[in-house]
Image 1 (cartoon, rainbow, N blue to C red):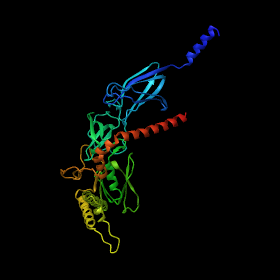
Image 2: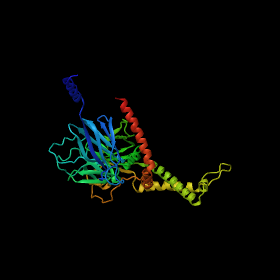
Image 3: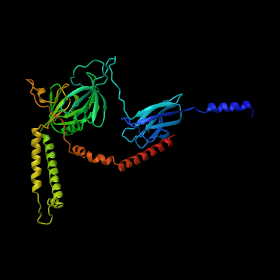
Image 4: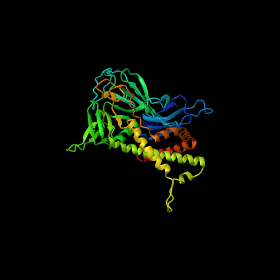
Length: 421
């Protein structure tokens, strides 16, 4: 081979070899602490794994750590995923082009968009009657949201983010950033009539009202009696169907839930009160018997409630036949006294609580706002048990088990992806 042929072959080799680059950076938690010895995965836009590495370990498990370097990366768009052992890991979109890439420090902080005043016409299509709100500056926010708390106070906002127990939003009037706890929020909907959040209390109200008689009070103060009612199970402009025996045409009437201020159930609601009273009595008897069993360290208290089936049949029924009827009657009285038959939905106007005074044509009657919170024993039990459950869920054996399942799922996912190429 002469010298000229060698030069041609060597040049062809260099041209055919694709140039690669490196990606380096540091991984940290949201509080700034570095993440040591964490898996770093580089994937392409189809989430196919290109290569893996790990962040550097900490010195004495305390100092430094968190650095990583990915080598021999061709030009293109990639996704970097870092498992830092929290619910939200670190995910970073990167583009490699013509040079090595230094990402600096990246963490698991989710950035939400900042809303500023823009010069454009508001072309939002309103699909239902929004509540009467305070005039707001024009063209400040494209899609507005209405947050309603359990007392019926409504506020026009833009929702920035929702986490496990809180909702962060920007006030549409003064553009101030604020927060409300989910425990105090009834529901949230936007200009298009889409519910983005419905509290458990709101859903329980819908379930309790359905299949009962009563009457509706609309936003314009009109009323409508019905013999049965059904709430559509949708989050996008849900409708409410009412059935009327007196209507000879037997036609169902449909209404937007955003046009309904209040639903008051009729006498048929007493069935709910009886059911609740019965279970309240059962729970009370169970608590009494459980307490007696713990104090006596014996199963005799529960055996006394079981009848003897050998003739003549005998048993101690005094507790059951006394407590259950008393609790049932007590629940009926309580529901009547606290007006549990009244269920409020879309407020009349912004900043006005749920209350009967809005429908008085004379001077308004000042009274406490009606709170729409519905107590849930299961929810209360779950919250009270968190101090016990959380340490168990965060214990090393449970974490090991979850990581084992996660790694198994990742391996199966990687096999399916590699088989598809």
